[in-house]
Length: 222
Image (cartoon, rainbow, N blue to C red; front, side, top):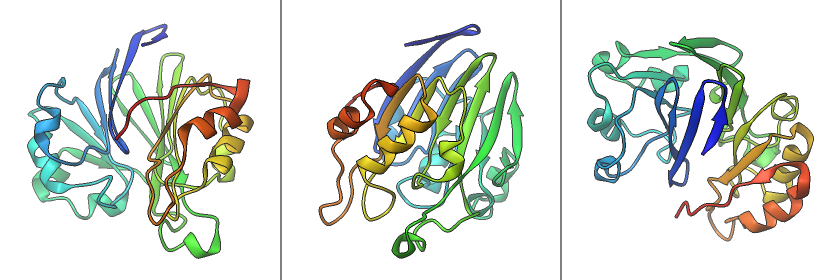
């Protein structure tokens, strides 16, 4: 539980990159995928944020099962183009550098992309989103799939961050920790750390490298 001037923020890690947050502005789902039954006991979503189109972040069937009357979605343009007309009518698309709002929540789309040459095909610059969510004086950063890009390192006044790491798709724990040491969120969850071909990253290693630059929240994501 995290406190803001608007009220408490409660985080529910679901799996890999899927997160639920109960906040003063509503229940937020981030990149919900998988069997809809795993969400059955959770509070229903008021807002769903999708960072990009990869299957561990976006699944149309999961969304169809989760979206209720009144649920809104925020997506990047590539995901928006894949939605049905009915789902598009509930959605707002925001590209890198654009913003939207949901009641008292401001949503800023932050770039998310690969820097390493051999990884650039996974997340090309300009396509995918991270998000900064601002409610009153409380700011949340959701990295999406990215490396330790300048836009991440330049973030300011982040109270709660979710930072990805895995190989070959995003970055090693060392790069993620180095970025966190630079933008210094108050709290950070390492997530999305299961990789391929030995690319799974160790969240404890990440925590050790972050040191006292942030409070690292280690939770079971798998």
